[in-house]
Image 1 (cartoon, rainbow, N blue to C red):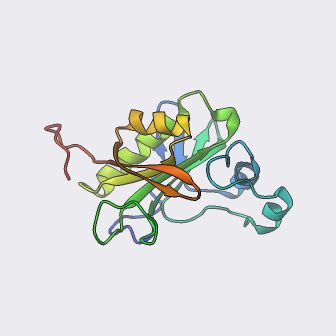
Image 2 (image 1 turned 120 degrees about the vertical axis):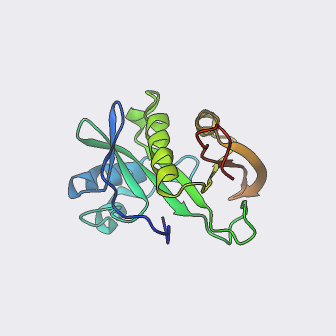
Length: 186
């Protein structure tokens, strides 16, 4: 989260039924490299990077920054979640001055199909709603990414618009935390 406002970072690890969302550690380096080198993972995000390039470029403790959670299953990294400010230059915004927080996530292929992405993203969104009450979160994905489209619906993202970016149709949606009355706060 670039400039997230009054949020202490890193938060205490977030525990779900099966997962822990935590800050990155040195032991996660190999999983970060695998994540960014995987052709399956990068199909919809611009392609994988060469492993040798990643071996040289990835720091000893990768991903240690505000807004990035490692998704940990039984002590091992299986993916990551990011909550970052959406670039004002990109299409897709819900505010005239931009500045929305955008949810991103990537999981290693062996973690696909087990509900980990939904579990981890739900926990991150719940944490975000507590940390910044009333703040919406946006998500953008290619319409061709069926898994991401299903997850967006499962998480409660509502379509705002579709547009062309990176040579493909993009789906852009918004998630708004709900108050105890069940009404959206935005």
